[in-house]
Image (cartoon, rainbow, N blue to C red; front, side):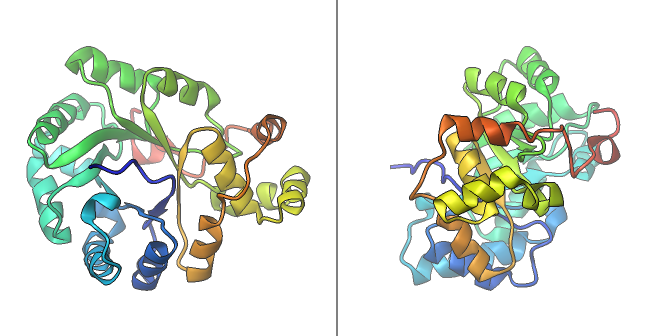
Length: 271
């Protein structure tokens, strides 16, 4: 039986220096979701770490979820016919399938062709679910209107300084699950210095990152967090013994200033 998607994912962007220990700690703490991309340079080591820990902890492959991406250069190089890159990544990681495959950036000229390839890849069983990163409602509407197939998942930058409430409401109503990268906003000083978050931390005896990760879960979003420290993995996984009240969620929502760490126009001209 296929397991449900993990409630937490460990990201591997800029996270290769201590990844072996970090992945092992994730397994120890029951963090069974892992996110990578070709541009991260972590596919190979992540694949090795997953194989080693599946064996060490006697965990079946279907208990963990691995998400990978197709980068912009791959879309351009093949004009959207990206299947060979998916197969190369699976071979590199020694996996039979990806749980989620994302279009990393919605390059306008190749988005539809890439999405049509994704649909075929999913039908062939190389991936279980397909999704889009760094998109807006109009991109989802475009792929749906031109292909008839909506994304299973959306991955966007989301944290208390960029809450994305209208988008999340739209995706939820459409039956699309949302993942949040940069989920704790790289601990921007406007978060660490927030009196409201500090008070919640004292109330629940949790750190600010734990409060923010719980906020994601309580708003039905799957956070992707990053750390190269084992103790931070353990801390971030310890968020299941409390829930935020609706008024507290709304207080965190009020921190929104539509602030983004990753400016889309730099990575994806024409978005």
